[in-house]
Length: 180
Image (cartoon, rainbow, N blue to C red; front, side, top):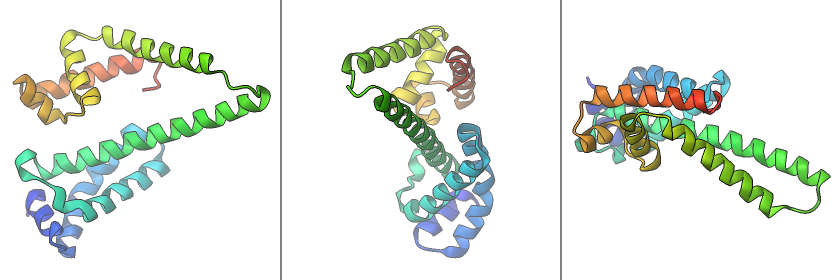
């Protein structure tokens, strides 16, 4: 049975279908999460969260918007990105707390300048991409479209969009010093 059919059964509470679907998607989910999160232990945790979310929200799957696998991988990508952002934010909070312990007064001007510099840094890195890469990356990461939706909006094959995204994100990672 295919993932699309299994997901419909899972939406109806079919545990056997979920076991089969789990077997189909757990590997790709972990692989995607691992590439984003990088830490094996956290990747396992995020992958399990995604698969639990899959069980709970299977009814939200709309076959008209794409395949079950792409929907599941979108859930996984979003959850992995959220984990990375959360970890970075926690690290930043700890760093700021340490600074506050040494500097009692909060400096709004410094915070605003740092945020502005970070935005400018990202903007410069985006400007280094080709126009086609920048367009695809912007639609996916700033406007929230899936790769399939980006392909539809640009009237391009999905593979072309994936290639542009991969190349663009590789360039951004290099420009941002490997942090992205």
